[in-house]
Length: 416
Image (cartoon, rainbow, N blue to C red):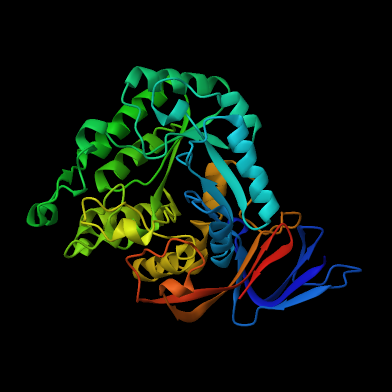
């Protein structure tokens, strides 16, 4: 189908494009023109983007799909066209057949692209290596332990040596098992006042330090997920400055919230890793502004019953796929970041982490496109979410930024 998206502000951060009142032309699943109508082009469908921004489809580096149909519908409603899925499903993605089934199910649904992370170890138990080559062939883009740690450092070394041999990337959430196993909230004044067991920043920095040393030994390409502290981010940046193959991301909630948002045991503000101090939040924001890190939703749909529990028993996480765009816009406004730079952190920057030719709108690029009204406001209530996870610390708040249309591979998969 030939599609023209007209009258919009086209922003393509990777290629430095920011043009108002411009048309984007799509044919056979790819971008074929910007501005002037290509020769012989006849539109089968026209999308009027007046007052809207037309940008590459968002790429989310971390979203759990507890119900794949509902969560992929939530993704495209949020302008997300590619979703990286951690391996901590039930059962874990430690066998090629499971990964193959997930990829094919995503293709059958025909919404956002599913990019699975294969389990680094069998059952995510941190002991025996999973069948990495078979998982890669089945469509896994990299290998991960999700938020589980490999306690045995020698096992992690061997896994990284093996991954480096075949050019596989390893994604790790840096968290020392012994310092975090009993913790619930950031170790600090708020946790002490509420009587909650703390997780110190050292749990993150010790793990990052270990991973960095293993990268130096093995040369393995590593992506560190959900960095939560100023000290942790500084270690990552130092490693990047030393030209080590290390990238990282920050959950969008950690750019906007702090330990104080726990309030009086607000379970919607329980995350893994935990929300930390204002200084940590500011340092993470500065790092994202500087381009040291990408932004992800850390989408974790949790059932209502699992949040209606005492804080220490409630499951961590919040819905995020439909909020990645408005929360990124909220962060950009607070951090005084212009719109193209903010969009880069959720389009071209994640694509670079993944090593994919995506996240841009150059001629010949796959037509993954998000059309959104940057001024439209809407109230976040459970009924407004397509995800089965209705849990969010932002419930009741007004959001700014509303997706009007989403294209994946040149197909319109969502219209508001």
